[in-house]
Amino acid sequence: MSKRSAMKRQVREGVLDPREFSQDAKVRRLPNHSGWSPYPSNDEREQGYLKTLKPKSDGQAKLLEAIDRYSLVTALGPAGTGKTYLAIAKAVEALEAGKVGRIVLSRPAVEAGESIGFLPGDMEDKLAPYLRPLYDALSDRLSMKRVKALMAEGLIEIAPVGYMRGRTLNNAFVVVDEAQNCTYVQLKMLLTRLGWHSTMVVTGDPHQSDLLPGVSGLGDIAERLEQLDSVAVVRLAEQDIVRHPLVAEMIGVL
Image (cartoon, rainbow, N blue to C red):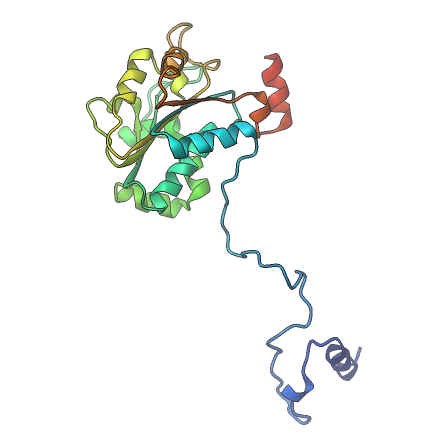
């Protein structure tokens, strides 16, 4: 196709305005507008990258509502129901909105059925494999560069359960993950860390504990907390699993 015929086609389709070009110009300006768009003209969607937090099941909707209403929430459910992700996402949302001054994430340093052995490095290096799931959830809501900057400023703290004794967590959003690997005494200690203007979310699956049978205290703690009107205990089920559909099928038979 010649240049002249291509130009006529562009003028016909409304891509180019012939008045913008002189007949004898050797250098022509690129068009600054387009006559066609792949999106409808009434489409006002935001083109910026933003992950909107929306529940994908009734159980997740109850969990998000409970986090907004109560200062202490316990989320129990099988793997893949989004307990940890939703809790950390709400924590990031509260920090970004200025509702809390910091985020405190805690997780027991317990191996999943096998002994890793001695790990080299300082304390942070030794704990990194255990706390990696928390980093993954944080980096999904924030860039890793932003996560490191907030951690350097002390606005995000990730600590094992063993280092929570004696603390008072004021103006903070606290997430206790994998609480099924905590004993009754440990959970009692963690729950009593709650301070003023703070929110605490405890997540876990009582049926997937890596402790010896009868040692986990999550189920007993949840039953006792259900007696309090000021505490929310949200129990997620198989229909709330948002991972691969095969996960929900396996949970039902395993």
